[in-house]
Length: 160
Image 1 (cartoon, rainbow, N blue to C red):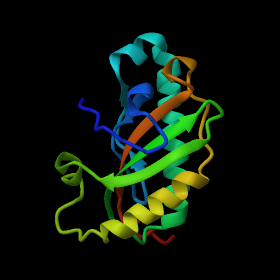
Image 2: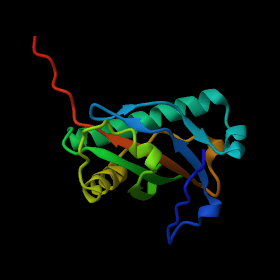
Image 3: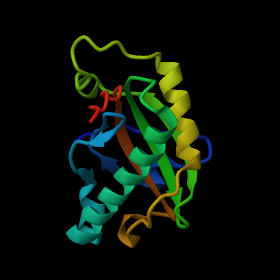
Image 4: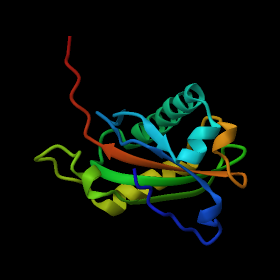
């Protein structure tokens, strides 16, 4: 999987380990599948640790963004997040997702404005409590996580 490059004036991209989550979607937000790390990082972290981190990271993002959104915004955006060694965000940037990811939005669903989606995701990125990152994913005390997010309106709950 090709990982997009993310640049920040405070963060040297070449010095950051990149970790990519597969698209996260929801009836508010629900995980679609796994994640990937670049081959060097994967070799440094055992599969169980990587799998556990992936599930915990997806859960953290899903729970926080879904609670804030409450099914009001609909669309697809990619979050580029950089964490420090204390699992705190040092960069949160939401960007337009790739066309392949944008195709995950069901036909006939009208997306909210990209600026609204980006604002929500970036705001919640800074407020999320993140899981511990496996040691092998860090490079220069940082790790970059790339998470495509699919926000979909909640389905009405059936009444008893």
